Image (cartoon, rainbow, N blue to C red; front, side, top):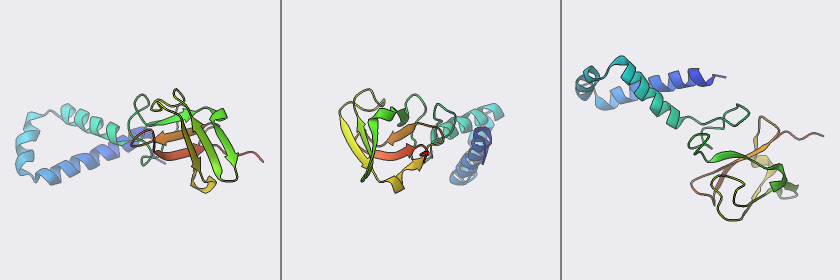
Length: 145
């Protein structure tokens, strides 16, 4: 598995290649001389940082499909354990304002156990996107038997 730096470098290269293909050489030949190598690298890293998933507090990364934003503005966040119950239907999640940075009203979600993603720490996490009403991804820790 690639670490975050290697992923950013690979993604930056892909972004630059895509830009080169889109601009088809003509416009690229006019733009690149205006930018120093450092400016091109900074631009690529900024684009890459927006597109990559951010990390949970424990240091592991949320799946790119689930995550939009960063650790301050993103839609993925750890939630309190007492907000999750395991029932016959699956994980029953009850959110109140303050439980997640995007939640402003009371919500109740049910996620079938088979649809939960594996949390890489001992906490529950969820991603709300495109709004607080839509649970995009739910991460559950391993259960002890």
